[in-house]
Length: 298
Ligand SMILES: [Zn+2]
Image (spheres, rainbow, N blue to C red):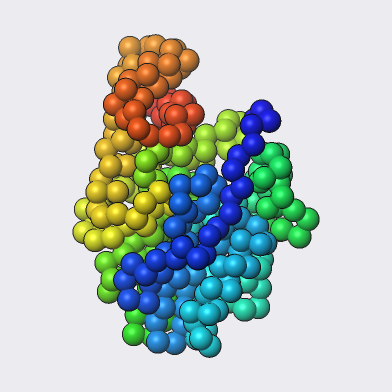
């Protein structure tokens, strides 16, 4: 990346909003590399979903969670291993039990160090957030299958989705409130983030991701908290599903006629920008095309 400075990826905990009883979201306010963060309470315990990037952000999130918890036990989970979602978990240390699905724990172990180095190269604003004491976290408890976390009068469902935005995505569902945290399986106001960086990282699957969203969109969730962007209703899921379908269809149609990847990327990019002129993150379109070309049945 060139010397274009990204905005400081600062979490603003003062903006936390209660979207359901005892369920807060710290909105990302449209800042790149800041995720939406959840704080979900039951009578006995409180679960934090995602940490923000780096020590200072996570310290603020932990402080808010502790204030909300008022002595209730703390748990932490992360939606996937990407730095702005998980690379603050070291701050929670002994103060919270960090839970994660098996595939995400594997991602953290195998890919975490490389991502820490890569992100430290994204310019001073990001490097400052990931300075010396930040390390790739290891969950305290790794689960297989799904995990039902009883917070006291409220059970939260942690569910790995299978390969989508990453190999180890999980969603966090709060059934009594009708709320679903999707991590980066959904974003609003932007093109879906495809971390397709061959040969270093080719774990994202457009085909898998679409299948996940077709399933989630049929599940009747009332409130959806995307990884980045605005909290919304079931339309958040439907919109990303529809976008992934059109990205796949437009890519594969051209691939069927033996068009080269660069030409496909240029055409699909122009077409999708025309259809979604208000969306940011146009650089993710051609990465999505590259991923779907690789997944096209030869
Ligand atoms: Zn991500």
